[in-house]
Amino acid sequence: MWGVYLEQLLQSLPFFLQGLWMTIAVSGLSLMAGTAVGFLWGILRSSRRRVAKALIGAWVDVIRGTPFLVQIFVLFFILPEFGVHLEAFPAAVLALSNLAACFICEIVSAGIESVPHGQREAAVASGLNGYQQLRHVILPQALRVMLPPLVGQYVLLIKDSSVVSAIGVVDVTRVGWLTVQRIPQGILVFGLVGLLYFAICYPLIQLSNALEKRLGRSARR
Amino acid sequence: MLETFNIRVILEYLPLYGSCLLATLWLSGAGLAGSLGVGCVACALRTSRFRMLSLPAAAYIESIRSTPLLAQLYFLYFGLPSLGVPVSETTVGILALTLNSGAYMAEIIRGGIQSIAPGQIEAAISSGLSYLQRMRAVVLPQAIGITLPPMLGQAIVLVKDSALLSLISLMELTRAGQILTSERFMPAEGFLTSAVFYLMIYSALKTLTVWSRKRLIYLHTG
Image 1 (cartoon, rainbow over the protein chains, first blue to last red):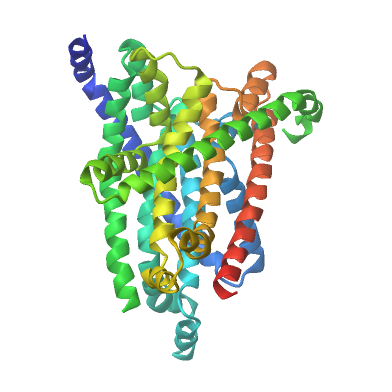
Image 2 (cartoon, chains in turn purple, yellow):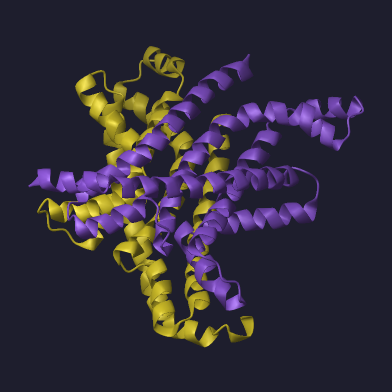
């Protein structure tokens, strides 16, 4: 009995790989955009610009305090009321990029704050301007602290991307949901879905652990 | 849109939101309690010297951490009935939250125990404290202080994760938004009201986290 289902499941493997590609596309685009915006927000947040700091802080709190599912529903169902019609894919990328930016912003500002104050003073005393201070003194040191949690955060965001299946983006989770209507073996179908996520996330988790060990050691030295 | 934002409809649906708020609190509270239990057991097995025990625990923790909650939820929701196990949506929902958070709790507890310097325990032994006295006076106060902030962080994640249970048609805050959207075609009112309720839970838990961080510093210095 399971053999028949297994065969059917193997036949729909191309469908699953398409879904995997969609998961990679949504999370890849969002991670890139989210990293860029998150760094910008994080740098602004650890600067002395009071208004920008307060605005970013409040926005990060709102996003961190609400479920991603609600955020995506708000974006997908409410924007049309303003006359902005987004397809499911751009809506998903936009929502996930924003989520990524908010979490990465916190990691970046914590990383910048971890750099001893004397370093910035020394950079100022050396006559470096604001950009040069960041580029040559602060960020290289902050990056050591930031990298392991950043990779860990990427894993969380790739997993969060499964939620975009709720607005009809055909990612791996959605493919599983569609397939289970046809092949009523939840264990098999979602076992395969889990396996595909595992193949992406597990190596990244190991990478994050390895980075933590290596960079943590060199930071203490 | 704002001129059409209908406060009256929200007031009309407020009793629904109230009961759904309670449902969210109950579902995530049950998940939290369950995950503390699962987390303690998984951590104990994971740190065991016997590979027979530590390997399955490690496999459980790693496979949960490497897959999304939604996939786990569907795995149980579609999987248990196909195995011939009849379970209600509520059971599946709480089970998924418990198993998911349990893996993260196990890691938090492990981190807390490992962060206690071995010298502390040696000092306690040489002071002549018994095992129970050691746990009570030396290990637990420090471990709880260290693990409390990340556990509260996990509780925040758990409350937000419980929103996914609306996808298996459980009644909770996000579902209330969906109901308002489908009955009155008012997604703005529906989902923004849900969001406000989540923010209320979030700010309460965040205040608690800040407080526990302060207590933690106090524990270390005093």
